[in-house]
Amino acid sequence: MCSPGRLIAAGLLTALAELVIAAALLAAAGPQQVSLTLVIAAVLTAALSLAIRPLLAPRDQPRGPGRRNGGLPPGPPEPPWWPEFEHEFRRYARRRPRTPAEPI
Image 1 (cartoon, rainbow, N blue to C red):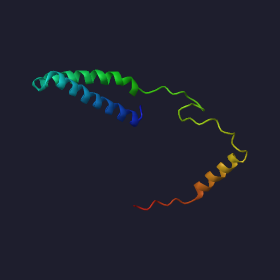
Image 2 (image 1 turned 90 degrees about the vertical axis):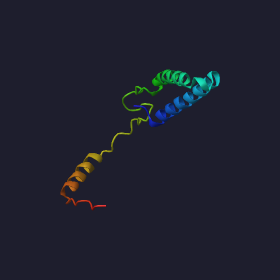
Image 3 (image 1 turned 45 degrees about the horizontal axis):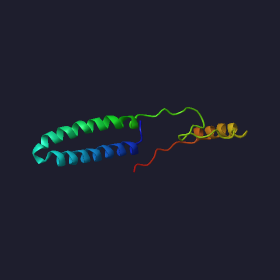
Image 4 (image 1 turned 180 degrees about the horizontal axis):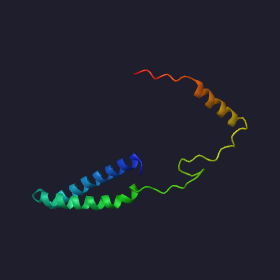
């Protein structure tokens, strides 16, 4: 999916374009041709929306560590004491009595 910011920007761009198109058509055709102006504005807005659609398509992101868009670079190897610490912590967490959370 695309980001919410891109969706908002595309929607605002389409709405702005529709206003400009409608104003230009009303100025050219006159107020007597309001229905024709609205039909032409709707068709041009649909065409503009289809033109903007590729901007909203999801992007292919490279997989694996070190990717450019938010991926973390490979970190240092885990310390030698880590497996033992993790094992001991899990044993501690299992032995500890669990108390239910208080209602808010």
